[in-house]
Length: 266
Image (cartoon, rainbow, N blue to C red; front, side, top):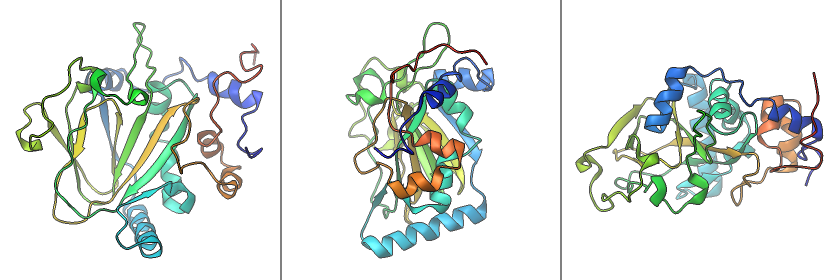
């Protein structure tokens, strides 16, 4: 593990103090709890969208013209790196995951041509992906596992089933076209717009005639490990060392490092 990624006792203390310091509106907390997602509006400017498209086009030319998904996009720097640490998004991650004890566990970009609709993800307790669990305590404190941020680079239709993150039953829509699923709601994202949701939500990307290009950033509690292939390189760690928020997001996974629970006063 690179020294620039290893969390120090001071780092851990700074991360833990975020608990109970929410600045998220109660309306947003309530909507997220009952729906499982939040539309965040415009996150990237038109020029940033253009830069991100250019980065994806370059990657496609360099890697493989047939590539459909690019994993670990933050290594490319530029907008693809900056978008992981948007200040408009961080308060929601702090609120919904675990105070300041959250980290980026993966990033990717979709480069695929339209090939029909995706199938609706399961969501709820029937979802076998244990890392996707939604949690909220009786005291109104969120403890979600994986949270996903989608940012559209082209017009993007994301179908969601509001409230499905709390479902106790498997959904019966595995082989049904999305348009025929009664509880499904379409979120229409313009280029640069984003949506944040718990991975425990049932969702799917809709179909459209052009290429589907969007960015996806996946966050989890501080102990959640990186996706395979998404471990930050030494070059990336050195590049973000002077940026407190980015450095925070790529700290190595930890739960209770030695002396992490030591009480202090400030």
